[in-house]
Length: 249
Image (cartoon, rainbow, N blue to C red; front, side, top):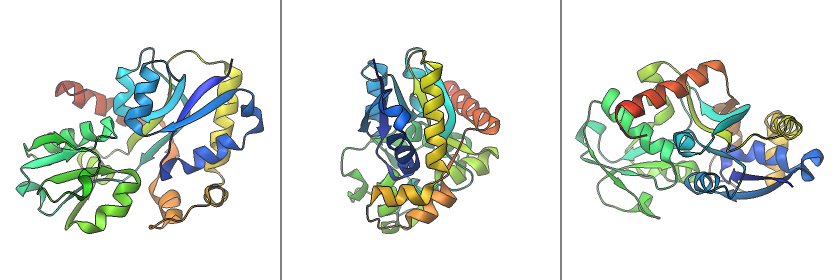
């Protein structure tokens, strides 16, 4: 039986997608599907897939969660695609609209509000299209929507940078997680495929064959980091610690 793998269909996963889909050894080992962060986490939680790249904030919701591979979606100081956007400075914001596509970012912005920004806004969940609604709130916006909409706002806060300023650590946004023990053969082939994609970003961009309204090369080479280092694992634990203390995890 093939391992069921779900991939987040965002620009930051392009190297992974390229590596996985071009691994001949994985063709007989895995079936792939796609979704946005909250969606694929729910699929993993309900055992509809065996493994997915999921938002870090969703990991505690997954039964038997196991981080698989030493690859992730992370950033140090800036990521460009995980933002709070507003037409007012944060100390004048009364409401922050959360992003329906990502648990991790919604938890992150609440941690930063308390521990970094010292503000106590009202948090509301956005519905599809909220990022362009003129409702006066600051907005958590992630992924390609952040890259495409940030210029519409007067104030833009990069949440990787805000985390780094507060705690002097890089931030991990997503990791490869399984809900069961996977075979060593599969894991080794999977990690090799991820490595291949990360080491061939230019080929990955060409493979996707898509036009972008932002500089995709600069973004993948200089904003997103893919190695899940010990320092980044420490950062994940700090994130969980703060979230549990606030009872929002």
